Length: 337
Ligand SMILES: Nc1nc2c(c(=O)[nH]1)N[C@H]1C(S)=C(S)[C@@H](COP(=O)(O)O)O[C@H]1N2
Ligand SMILES: [Mo]
View 1 (cartoon, protein in one colour):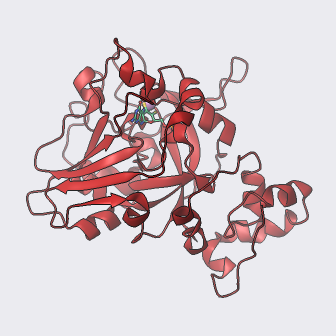
View 2: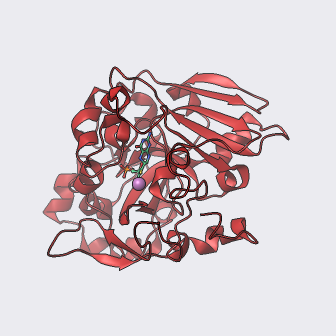
């Protein structure tokens, strides 16, 4: 792949690169690994990214996505002192029950999902409802990179560099009415390509649904993602559009979204409907409130194996308490788990 160097006018490197990265960068220049991987990188990326993304399979991104990359600003919501999970693990250890319940099933089966064309419906309590082709839906938004922890309720975790835009920007576009209190997200339903939706003994009443309180959705950490590791989302990670709410258990971060609705009542969400005593609507990461069948005080950070389990303490709100704790002031987090 040809890589174009950024024009000086596109962006100043010091604007888009955290200072500590910028200063350490000279050490990496000239590294053959970096040079090799650079061919697979978007033009805004720097030498560190070449190392960071060395194992990333390049995607075949649609034009609306690649067109956005030159405008992408590096937003340093960095996870410091923790390594980014290898691309291979982030894309081969997945939960996406539409494609099977084993961790390897989504990587194996999601290739059949056709993400182009893709339609997103915005409806409910909004001044400007609409039905959009994804490329039109994305037009108003600038992509940012966000490096977040992802903590699954099953007590494993990863660190993933997402690319997306804040939900607050979407809400500004669609103008929620005064009745809108919650936002509801719905995954594609297509039993022809989603074997999990054909399965007779699936627990889930498809489509997969998730939701947030409107003030949670407005929090700057909450994003809709279209990419990861500098490329578009692989299908198994929820292409072409998914939710990312890093202070909540992973099941809130619904994949392959086709419908976004502003609603008055708290939506009936998938995992809460299956087992309300195990999976709550809030699902905030909380080391002090155990799952009825296992502790939530610790987690396995991937990659993790028998001889290097890589266990660490789970942090309140997954380490994002400074940003989100105020949303829950006065709420009993044992009852509202
Ligand atoms: N539609 C849909 N979205 C989903 C799921 C699912 O089964 N179906 N699994 C959830 C769970 S339990 C987790 S932990 C994350 C996993 O995201 P990842 O595979 O990109 O790591 O996706 C969430 N989003
Ligand atoms: Mo999960």
